[in-house]
Amino acid sequence: MGPFLIRRILLAAPTVLGVLLAVFLLIRLVPGDVVTQLIGLEATISPKRVEELRRLFGLDRPLPVQFMEYLRDVSRGNLGKSLRTGRPVGPELARRFPITMQLAALGVLIALMIGVPAGILAAVQRGRAGDYAITGFVLVGLSVPSFWLAVLLILLFALRLGWLPPTGYVSPAEGLGASVRHMLLPAVSLGLVLAAAITRIVRSSLLEVLGRHYIRTARAKGLAERRVLLRHALRNALIPVITVIGLQFGTLLGGTVIIEQIFGLPGIGRYALEGINLRDYPVIQGAVLSIALAFVLVNLAVDLAYGLIDPRVRYE
Amino acid sequence: MASSTLASGTSSIAARPGVRRRLLRHPGARIGGLLLLAVLGGAILAPLLTPYDPIQVAPPQRLQGPSGPHPLGTDLYGRDTLTRVLYGGRISLAVAGLAVLLSLAVGGMLGVASGFWGGWADALMMRLSDILLAFPAILLAIGLLAFLGGGFWNVVLAIAIIYTAPLARVGRGAVLSVRHEEYVEAARALGANDLRILGRHVLPNATAPLIVETTLRLALAILAEAALSFLGLGTQPPAPTWGQMIAEGRAVMTFTSWPAIGPGLAITMTVLGFNLLGDAVRDALDPHLRGT
Image 1: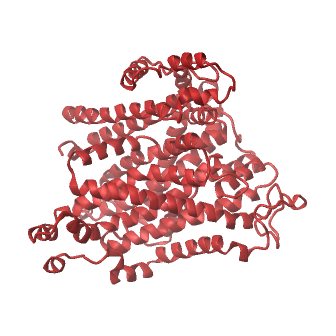
Image 2: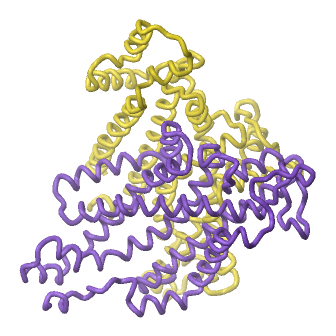
């Protein structure tokens, strides 16, 4: 496991560096640089002040020097200050990150709770009514836009039935029950696509595993069908589920940008969108960087989990 | 000519009679095709199908529920929702189609070339795509539009950029899987040059994954365009788009749910159509994968 772990972590390093470079260039690729963009907001400004601002952003120095300084700042957790509020971006991200992660984690959890049983049911019922119904759910689930689903869920469960609050955020520290109630609709909106993807992969990999010789052996030695299914088939069939979660996690994180906006959750996604709407470049940089890094880390974790669960992966 | 008899698939894969027959018989292809035909037909024939104007406001008729003259109700400005859904399909379908075509042209070509020739350019391309793929696609598109500004062509460009890396990957993978086939070696032994080998022997046998990926990408592009215009970053009003209509419907949802329902159904129908068609194309091109 050791060498595999080290090799995989080393492979992620260039990507992380590339992400940092891309986010760094983001602010430099703005047509006419950030300072001119900002001045556009305030009509009268002296050329001397423009030079001052350039120096402030470090835009007067060569790009490689700027990049090294950016790396140094990021490694110290210094992500600059918001151009609008003057507040440092780092602490703001730290405050918002758990909210986005709570939403994403609950989304994955809901997806697993729907997807795994539905996938098993479809595989066991193969070719019968249950299978067709679940396959239909999968196809529709993969085709419904999450933000439309969010609007429909608010309409039904918040406005019509009044069971759940339409928007807002309560932290788990303030009350776990209220927190979950506020997170439920956003998490379902976010998790449905993943639920459909998981159902599909559980069904197909379970069907594949059920055709293997060791399943025939297990049945031949007289094991109960339930035991064959859960003990021998499912454990092997669940491995690709981890891959799907890793692959879909980017979509999930991207989805938080819209879902947080709809439900008024003060997470990273909403922060990014606010930054973009106000052209607050340090905020955009910080938010995009943290989302991209979270994605890279989750994929690293997925690969490592893969290596832990399936010994064959390590020796490739 | 000897080289083409050796090659198992010098004719285009999609044109093989077996593939066409399997596709026409596939239930997914039939349903998906019908859904897409309905949406596309509705968008093209909109002026003939509805007596209303998608933009002209009619305040007395505002926020009505479904009725004979307005099957999907009316919006805040009294405009017929069905009319706006039909016209909205023009923009959504055009953006998605053009964006995917563009990313196929650029990404697919880069991927095919980089898989075929390999070397340092290939390695560089893969690292670059690693970095691009480290950003959630929709976030990248939002960021691009924040700098580019909204508007039809900028949305096309933003979506094309985010799908370039995935299509490059698929193109590269497809080429790698056939590059060392015997018929390629045979063509090389007969003295065919790189371009001839690529064009006549490698490409025709590597198109299947690209065709499938392109169809499925169309589904994702429809969703991306809708999400961007929902956020107000897409094509600007008054010309209707589905995403924008859902945002408007959300704004009035405490009064009525109808304005948000019609456009969402249209998106779901379209995406479902492309997904069904994509799966059917995959089954038709590779019968071994069927049912998995």
